[in-house]
Length: 361
Image (cartoon, rainbow, N blue to C red; front, side, top):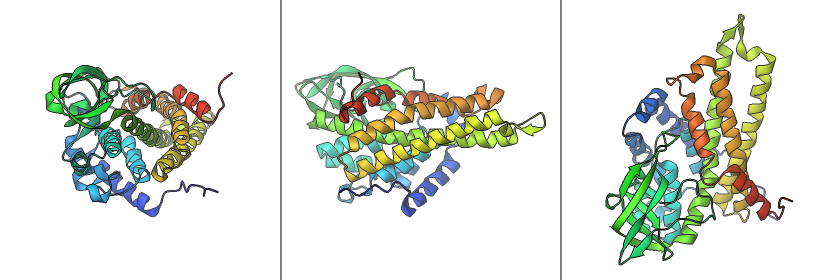
């Protein structure tokens, strides 16, 4: 009989959270993030260097023998919670999780070491909306080079190396300088999308695309739930703080019964999301046979909760919540964009039904 997973945070995970939160408090101010979204360089590469090089967080999933930290998905989940709380404009999920998982599946040790050290940033050239196990668009491979166009590639503008699936079934590493990366209009300005055009780009085959992409997208979906938890937790905490201070009719707004009910409902939803996200991270970390179910359940839960929390935060902040200067719009946009990333909640609910043999009538 399998032991029940321990979903509580360990002392080491709490210490990691504190260290990451301190760094983000000092180097990821909301006002600076807003300003950065209006510039031509939305990614904060200085913050990325601090996370990847200074703290070694880019290599958490990489074994020590290959230049990483040899940690697990549980530690990565804690980092993503904090990055979600700060809507940090860094390519952590796309490089340190998704691209790294694809490389782990392929055994590409040279690229793994580079991504783990933070010297290079990787991006899997698969549309951000692609769910684990879904069909993936591939480009044409001919005579050692790739030709084709891929759209909605998250963080491609910051990437140094692109991992590209090709029609011959291979996954190829392409230097980003050999591709044309064109920014797309993105709802979430802190995780920009781009179109990647390859016109005879030199490529190196690193492995088979199907198992690598499946593994990468499963990890991305499962750990995205922790980022969504961070978004929901920040919006709830900040809204409660604001409603304790904001007064109407000489009473704190948070004291009104109708508002209390809305906040209590949000707290219940966020608590449920925390359990689902932790379960997915633990299942991935332990290689559980139920990992597919845990990931699908987490994503079926995460998107509605994160979006609801951000929408309530916007409304309950009143007029100030509608302003560009207040950061709540960043969280709403991240929650909305994340609700489409790696499969919608509806798609994951359908997956859960198939996995547990409980199909819709």
